[in-house]
Length: 311
Image 1 (cartoon, one colour):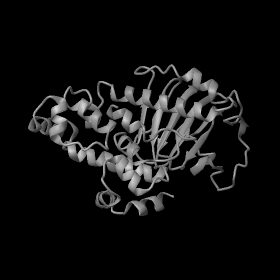
Image 2 (image 1 turned 60 degrees about the vertical axis):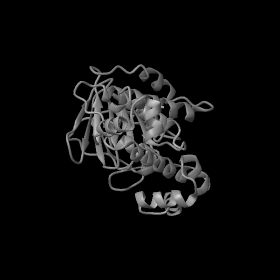
Image 3 (image 1 turned 60 degrees about the horizontal axis):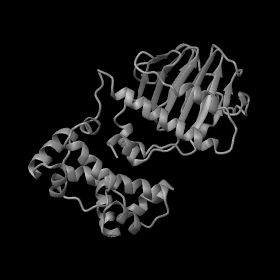
Image 4 (image 1 turned 180 degrees about the horizontal axis):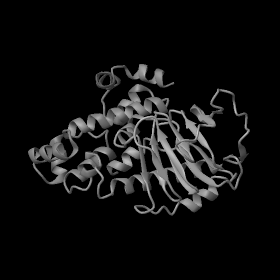
């Protein structure tokens, strides 16, 4: 498992909110859903994304934008257009004055707006939950980014346009996986730009020594790894591995492993009913006590407190 694959396991879509917005100018929608990650793919027309702080983005057909929450922003045909609707957590919609929309703009299966053949069409996918693993990925992204058609060409657009309005058995899973594919394609294109400054863990995966070591740690976090065993796998000395790993990743191998184990534990505490002892064994700790000690040192709460807060 490479570093990007491992981190994408965290924000994998589960029942993601997806919709096809069909709008006629003038239109503007205020987004305050606090979602950790939202993708907007413009199919037709033109749109602006205006954050409360920072630079605004202009989107043309084929362009994609990714908004990293929880900060609010406005999507509009023009930056000067006043918001006509408000998107709240869970996909709830209201007028700007707080009155519920009550389905006024519902146009059919996952379709929303003024009319089905509106002048502007945007495909929107929103991840509902932020995990600790996904947090490492999100923290590597700016609050708002865009990929224009001159730097990427997404073959998923026609397929997603068809599937997003389909009502068939298993459709939610199909859309979740399509959204995941779109995220992966977008992030690879973003990090591959000539002017990109990808995070250290992403650059390190291309290194012939450090890349395989990172994959070993992510594939089998429960293994009793030491710098010596990792160095033997990589065919270098312990000192050489420690120096090169720290230089490329930004932290020593064992520190990276600890962070990865605790991130896995945090997400499993939130997403499963496994006992703390079982989770400890899954991520490489010999007992619930050992995991609890390390977890509280990193997160300042016990695993049980973390689970209770997440619930």
